[in-house]
Length: 464
Ligand SMILES: [Zn+2]
Image (tube, protein in one colour):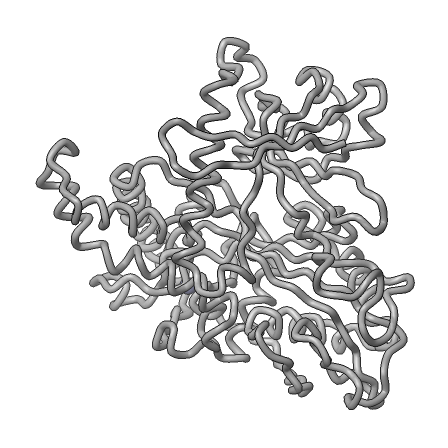
């Protein structure tokens, strides 16, 4: 099915692999399935055999009613080559990039794009159908909704079996994990994400403010990470999704108790009480987020947590010592360290924005712009946590944990629940213009703060 050719870009030294997939229009459903989409892209999964590595293709969207805007073949391919080169460059900036990031390949789907759009139409949300796939060229990724082949031997994990267990994948759009050091922030202690919630509320993009706070997630403190995860589960917005065997089973639109119940029962069939299952679920997510994949973690303790009904409008996004609180080799630390490039280059960006014409940028300026660009990419990335329960449940912790991808949780009645897990950073999208992003960032932050203070003022008037 794959036909590999090498594509090279005249302006770049690196060569980029290109795959061609030939498909029969009559039988697209045998090869492809709709996966998911955002504002900019549609993701399609490539159907594969049981023992093959699973893959997805990401296609850029264009407005459906604008035929003239159909992506130019050469331009779009050029854009994709730049994108792949940028993903290769990012490898140098993320700690443990070999473990946490995936570099895509360019793919050409040899099929009529209209046929492809018609085929996908039935599975796409109606609200998204204003835009469609605009080109045969896409990006081919390893499908992170499933575990990579190389982390277990053959079809089976080292201990236990995968029989009848589903693969789950949790997508977390974590957002900015540090506080901005300005007057308003110091005064009310709100982070960028939490301020922005009030702007979204004002613009009616959301119905209620989330209790999720990225500062909690990146804090390294188990209780605060638990609180962040529970906040995401309660009000997922576009920050939290659960996939089961590649299909979405929990997100903003599917957040009912019964869908969560199904997930928890599937993951913890030996655990009776729902609250107990939920504690194990949150612990599992937290453990993957903090996991160092370079060694075997033998710690199997599970912490319990209390529900806190704190008033989210008055709650502080309390600071912690950024990057010192997280385990060095975990995925959160890798993301946060890269995000901090934004704050480290912020004052220099201010100077560049105000004082210079692009034509006068020197080498030092280019470095600042580049660092800012890399950092801003990390602000908007998503974390994919993939895991699969191994059965039968092993009753002692003695014979598990022999690979770096095992996590063992202590369930009730002395049972140990074992999972093979993986973590990947995705949606590391190239921002075209650092200065434009910087201006938008500042404007949005300013408007978010105003929206928050407006909200609080109205709220206090209502209460008096
Ligand atoms: Zn916050």
